[in-house]
Image (tube, rainbow, N blue to C red):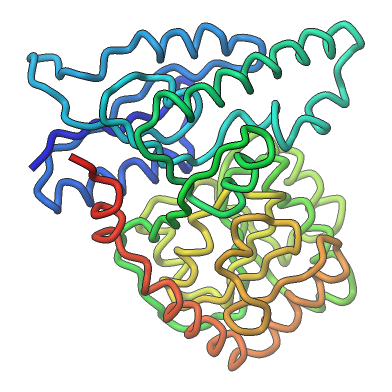
Length: 347
């Protein structure tokens, strides 16, 4: 059995999906008999990435602190893939998206001088990423076809798509209560505001929703809900513990997950594992690789009217929600952490 380091980069005191991803992989490796641990390397904000890439480049991942050899590394998120190891598998979650698919959004607010600076940084980071994928990595996987398409478009490299199974948790289905569930980090790309605007439309009827999560949009979303008169039908729960999340997943009618161009999104797989249908949008990216319209969920245009009608439909038809959710559970059951370990371990 091998000693394997899972390397991912994260800003200080920040919890993200990539850490859930890393912990689930660590558990799967340990259960397979390997020795495994997570190494977190620096990931700085915009304008300070050169130092982060250099720090990752200089991080020695060949030996443990006690001098034992590390047989393999599995990297996940920028710029962790800048670390060097002779057996380096990258299971890519995403690059720094501000310099790729989110460039137009990011650059729109820049001054002319700032745009010149960021164009130079964008070019440098794209070159650095391409170099790492071509010369540092023994084998390249992506967590979705969405991420792989970005690599092919901008870095002219291609990985093997390997969808992560849902994190190993005690998922249950305790029925189909009348309310919807939205849970995610409350950031602009997750588009909780789109859901609120949908619920405020007459097409949504009396659909109710629990919104769980924390993030930079939290105060704005609370204010928007009050402005739209949704206090009676929308409840904000903050960040849920794992136990509370499993309870809410188990009893909700369906899950609403409407991000913009999500890399993959564990939310979809988790909802399916609890036997719940997922409502998502035609521009949501990764979720569309699992959600099939009217087979295991609903796929609608990213506008409040279309989303309102989908929310009303599942809120008003428990039998449909159950049928779609049951199919989702069947679909996600084929994803296996045992298979992930088999494909990622190369030693």
